[in-house]
Length: 100
Image 1 (cartoon, rainbow, N blue to C red):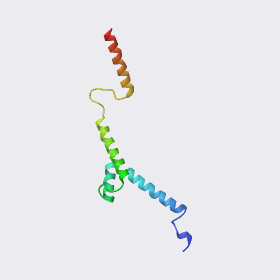
Image 2 (image 1 turned 135 degrees about the vertical axis):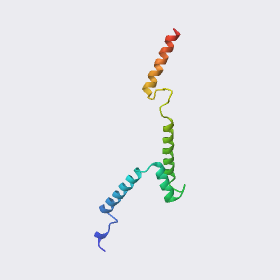
Image 3 (image 1 turned 90 degrees about the vertical axis):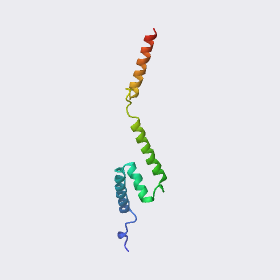
Image 4 (image 1 turned 135 degrees about the horizontal axis):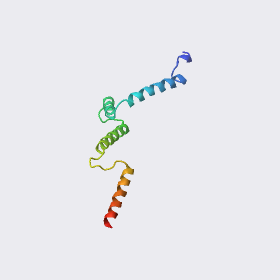
């Protein structure tokens, strides 16, 4: 068996592994957290294995649901910090004028 037929070591193998990793990464990035959890359940079984990945995906889903709840308030509360600071200063100034 000649060495030129072996692909297990060297630059060719590393290049092949790199290409495979890029393909897997692009496939993974195209899936949502819900889809990735479903895929893990299909591959490993429901709730079996990949504890860290499952907890990370669960945290992502929680953050997503919290962000939906934290959308702009209907009562007109300013959203940005600078706007809140200005509003607070304005209220303080109005309060001082009223007490004079």
